[in-house]
Length: 168
Image (cartoon, rainbow, N blue to C red; front, side, top):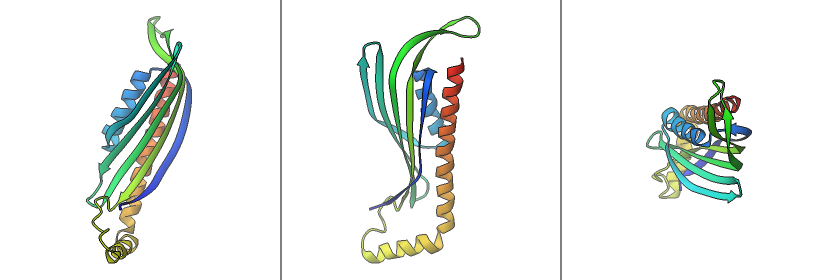
């Protein structure tokens, strides 16, 4: 069985005005373009409550880093009390947008031996442990730094997007 280690885990919240459609597209496109992840939406639940609605969305992403290492991600969005509002921009133009509460949870995971090639017997597992500890430790550190940096950048860019959207 492949060994998984969570390298990055963070959660942030935002409450205010934002365009859900634009935020969703921004997050999806940013992850694909900046990290190379393949993103799959594994959950989308929408609950209407009068004029507001709650959304529960989960994405899983992955990218093969080498034949031995894989980068997995899990991103969860919880949007609460989202409602459609109309605002006036700086040019006096009316815009339809959303208001509500957004919570985003992100995880970045390093998967070792993702194909399970070293799982056939105890001796191979022992060799894998030696290989990882003594031969490729710097490479593991480098990949962990990349995952941490990519997911950290995603969180910061998402926060910045929501902050800018709220100011318009």
